[in-house]
Image 1 (cartoon, rainbow, N blue to C red):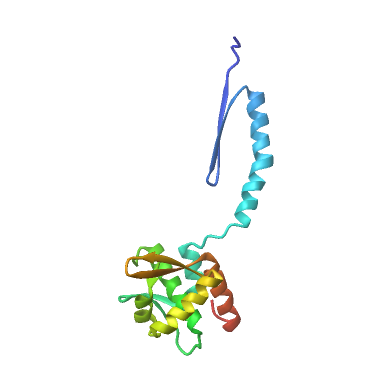
Image 2 (cartoon, helix red, strand yellow):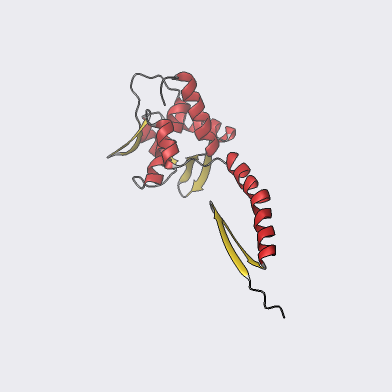
Amino acid sequence: MSSERQLSVSVSYGDVKVDFSGSPDVVFRSLHEFIAKEIPNIDLAKSISVNYSLNDLVQMFKDYIRFTEEGPRVWVQDRKLSDKDVILLQLTAAKAANLSGKGGKDDMSVQELEVATSLYAKTIGSRLSELNKSGAVERRDAEGGGRYKVTTTGVHWLHSQLQKKFPKMG
């Protein structure tokens, strides 16, 4: 039996945590291999990952949405938005309110969208169908009808649309 002392090293990098133990030589080689191979892979994966945080949503849509006593709302004056834009903004406002703890669910029914946006239910239903087909919203079936949630793709598409229409805004 070897009386060589064992070396233990714990490494944390973002959400990844690894432990190495063994002879100093083995630990050094393992640690070097981890740094050389895994860290670039972790950074590469992060560079293509998309997950909008509350801060991202606020920065992207601060000129278009507000949290009010009545709930999250589209907040635009003197700007011409399409019905799709208004619906996606409302769903994005619901998502942001949910992430902030200032709102309930991150999804909405047609009736809730009707109250929040003042659009007609038939218009909302038609636009939601189109948005669902394009992947901008996700339909969740619930008792009493479907509920709709903006997707990551929908947030990205909406942001790019608004930047084209209003280049000086958020």
